[in-house]
Length: 376
Image (cartoon, rainbow, N blue to C red; front, top):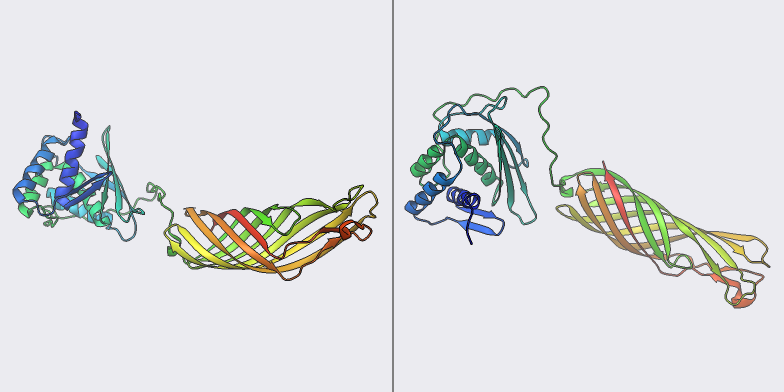
C-alpha cells in the first residue's frame, strides 16, 4: 500500500521525537530508540529533518508565544521558553505580537501516560501534533522541540550531534530577557478537558434531583421523585434528602362492590457514606436512617369515608457509585435495603372478606435510585 507524502512526513516526525526522547507512543505505534548506535540515530534524524515541512534556513526574526495548559506538577511555560532558546541558540520569545503562536495541552489519562496536543499557527498556516509520553516533562520538551524545529531545524541536528542525542541543553547564546508583565485582559485559557479528581478536593456542597424506585412499602412497586443535598469530603459524604412517591390504590380481595384504599407516601432520610476514590469515580457504602409518612383513605360503595396515617422509622445499609462528569456535575447510582422498626397493617373494619385487610408493608424494603448533582 502506498504511503502519501503527508503520512511519510508524520512518520518521520515520530522518528525524530523518539530519537530525542528515546520513547514515543502514538495510537497503536510505539517507538523505542534506547540503545541505537549514534550513527544510526543521526542518520534517521537527518532523514526526518530533510522530509519535514520547514523553512529552507533558520529564521532568527521569527518570534513565538505559547499558551501552556497543564497540571501544576508539569514544567512551566518558562521551561519551554528556555528549552527553545537552548536548542536554537537565541531567545525568540515574544508573547505579545508573536509571529508563531503555540497552543499546547498536557494531561494524564486513565492509561497512566501523558497525552500531549500542540497546535501551531504561523501566518495563515496551521498544524497540530498529538503524542503520548511517559511524563509531562517529555510533553513539555516535545513542545519545545517542535517550536525549535520550525525556527531552525539545522540547529536541532547540530545540537543532537554535539550532545549524542541526549536532552541535556547548553545555555542559549542570547541571554533570556525577563517575561513581560501579564496583560490587563489576557486571553482566557480553555477550560480543562478532564474533571478534577475528587481526591484533590477537600470539601464541597452539592444538591440535585433524583428518581427512585421502592419495593415493599406500597402495595405495588413504587416510583418517587426526590431532592438530595450533601456535604462531601474526599473520603466521606453526609446526605439529607426527601422523596414524594406516586400514590397507589389497593383493594380487599373478593369484595363486591370493590372496597379498598388509596395510599400516599412521603419519605425523608439521613445517610453517611465513607468513600473510596479513583480519579473521577467514587465508590462507597452508606448507613441510612429513613422516616416514611404513609396515609391511607378507605374507598368503596359501602365504606364510610375513613383514613389512617402513620410514621414508620427504618434503618438500612447500601452502596453508592458516584461518576464525576465535570468539575461541578456528577451522576450518582445507589441501592439499599431497609429494616422497618414497626409492621402495621391497614384494614377496613366493616369488611369481612379477607379480614378487611387492604395492605401490609413488607418487613424488608428495597430501594434504588439515580440522581444528578451540582457541586459547589
